[in-house]
Image (cartoon, rainbow, N blue to C red; front, side, top):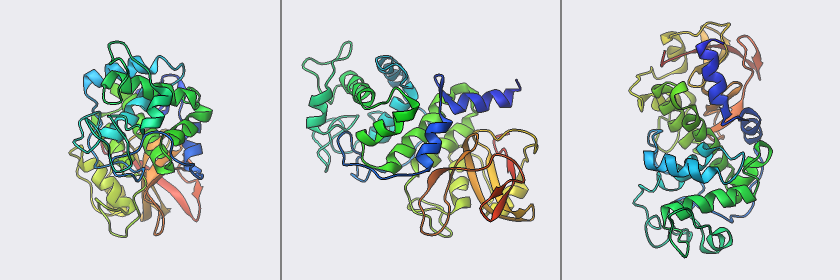
Length: 316
């Protein structure tokens, strides 16, 4: 298998669990239930300011060990939850190291007290009795809660994330961010950073001409995403397509690629960031939110009233 194909497979799978059906289900949307688990620092279900894809090594080790307590739960999903909730414990927001946030959530995995009590787990070397502020107990309790709500199966992983936080945007962001973590060395550093940034913007509004931080249009989103990796892109979709480097039309779309839509190579009107084969993160149109959604992964295929024009690899 070609190296690029290996990258696509690696990024589309989490520890042997195929991610594409999960992302496709998330892209389909759906209503969210009442909150019963963690909560983000601003109480909206949307992640805070974006950072790069790195998780502190000690956290990676902890989250990998905690995830083994739930067969089928990808460690990268647990890592994404910890990142969204508290920047892996590095956030100085209220409630992370002490006290509670405005929604009453506590600790690096942001548990409401009653929820923590329901799933409280003392991890190896953790505090006794278990504490939401203890890193080990918090990670093992998060794994226990996700597992109890279906986190060990691709078919119910999204439901588990919705049980953890009521927001559909939260579930999308965690799943998308987990791709960057799961890909590890198989995805370029630039591609991983771009995906991580874009994943953190899920749920923000489409804004014509927007380049962040409060909203984006399609080209503003991918420009900002790659800027975090030190890659400079032109501002508008047509210029981004023209700048290349173009991916061979016969190659499969790969995580980190930019995929372009329009009526032809000289009439590009939309761009998205490929997350997995057939799934992209994009800022669709006025009235919509930044989201993960499916697209036909073949050059020339119809996508609504437009066609898939081609793709580029800014990290190539």
